[in-house]
Structures are given as C-alpha cells and as structure tokens.
Length: 394
Image (spheres, rainbow, N blue to C red):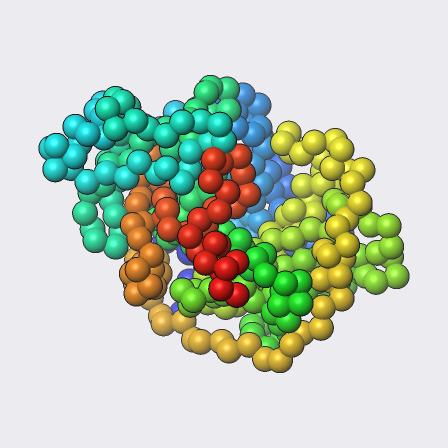
C-alpha cells in the first residue's frame, strides 16, 4: 500500500487535486494561498487560503505531512466554505406537514436551531434539500438553511462548518464529514465527567507504533514544547484522539490562552487519528502566531490559560492503548466501515446533502448526524441525549 493510501483519505495525489482546483480559485474569490510554516519553528506544514469577501471567515487553514497536503487542505477548506455561502441545492418549497402527507421522509434538524430562534412550524413553508441517509441509502429532505454558512444573513439555524467537507469524489467528501462529526461527538463526551478521568485517558504515542506519528512528536518536542495525547474513543469504536500542546514545564508559568493549543482527530486508524490531532494542534498554534484569522477576538491574546488545560500537559500516560489494524481498502471501503459503526450502535440517521454544482471538479457536502453531539455554539439545545446520558450515568 502506498504512503498516500496509508496517510491520506484522498482518491488522487495532492498534486492532482491542486491541478484541478488552482485554476478555479479566482472564480471563488480566493486571492492568495500562502505558506505559514516558517512563522513557527516546529516545521510541520501549515498553509492558508485567503477569501477577502468570504461570508463566514476570510482565511481558511490547512495542515498536512507535506507542503502539497497542507496546501490542498487549505484550498479545499476555503472552497467548501465559499460553496456553503450559497449552496447549489435543488429546493422543494413545502411545509413539514405537506412532506408528511406526500409520504416523503424528512428531518427538521431541531437540534441545530440557533439560540433564541424558533423551530420550523409544521405548517410553515421552507426550502428543503434532498439528502441521502447513509445508513439506509434512502433519500431524506432536510432544511437547506441548516447547511448555509453565510454570517451576513439571518438564519434560524446555528451556522457552523461542523460536518461540512469536500473531496475529489462524493464518497471522499462524505467520509471527511462523517469522521468530523464522530470526532466532535467524542470530544464533547470526553469533556463530560471528572478531570481525573480525562487525565487517566492520556496515552503514550510510542505505543501506537507509527513512524510518521513518532516523527511529528519528535518535531514538536525538538521545538521545546510538550505535547500530550488523550484517547477519547467512544462506544462507536472509531479511534478518536485529542492533543494538547504548550511550552515545556519551566516556561509554562503565566502562560496565556493562546500559548496552549489543541487539536483532535477521528479515523479508523488510531495512528491517523493521532496524526490529525497533532497537526491540528500545530495549526492552531499557527493561528495565534500569524494573527491572521478574522474570527479570533483580541481579548483572547490577554486571557490566561485555564488551570485545567495547564495540568493536562503534566498528565502521565496511563498504560498501553489497544491498536486494531485497519482493514485495507480505499475511501469507499473506509466510508462503508465508518457507516457500519454508526449503524451497529443505532446512531442515525446520517444524512449527506451535496452542496456543489455537478460541473465542478470537486464535491462539497454537509453531513448531519443529529444523534451525535455538537461542539460548543449558540444553539437552542446545548447538549444532546448522548451527553445527558453520560452526565447522568457516569
């Protein structure tokens, strides 16, 4: 199996994705793609794509094991955000009651209603888009507004890039979206419970026995930083890892919020999940070093780091982690296995809504899995059933 197949969920090489997408950047308002790696001394590639007139954020970031990987990551994130500003989705204007009367499956996505916003009334006509439930392979209508990422307009739904993903193929995009939803769910559940239980989930990265991961950890530690990995895998069984990174012990006193960064990842491969967590922690650090992201408030740079976050950097790895070999296969095979994990635990529906015109050489989807927990945000319902069940019974 090639290194690309082992360490990238892409159906083609990064160079091919660049050849397909770079000629389109100006059409999508992307004016610049820049290498930010050299602003830090870790050396793990981080790139940024600039969208000055973007209607969510003006800068998208990407990370990877190589410059091409990170560049593709930044470009694809920028493209998916621009597409989500005004999704190209055939709409059906109808009320929920009318859909029901026509025996059409739909999901109102009430769990994503924004704070102080009202849910869709049964007789209220709204625009619905036709998605596909990955667990049953049946079509399901969802409100198009739930996929829109345009902060210049009013929206009753919480606007977030959670579950928004892109790819060279539809399956590739859907796999990225589903894994992100599983990762966010795992992080929410990991935060529920005692600090002792979180610290006890610290793992030794060398136990994963992956040379690429070991190389990333060596780069971080070689830059004078500490990093800790925590196993937050849920009952779904899809490996999920979160990382915390910051200055080494003696230099940590008085650390600011922006000096301790984190990242998370989920994947069928424990190594890949850990690699995603580490590279995202590095990317988050670059966010604050560059000061370029327009959604970072100035007061964040003055806030002290939370005491609990600082203590996590002193966590002692607790025993070995069980690493299950990933079955060989491509993107479609891995998507099937991830969907099967959801199906086996009755976590559904998992709805994929395509957002991009079919004429484009890439795909963008929004993945909704209402039963999974969502990250912090301005929603009417902060917690879902999985969080409440863990809070009550753990």
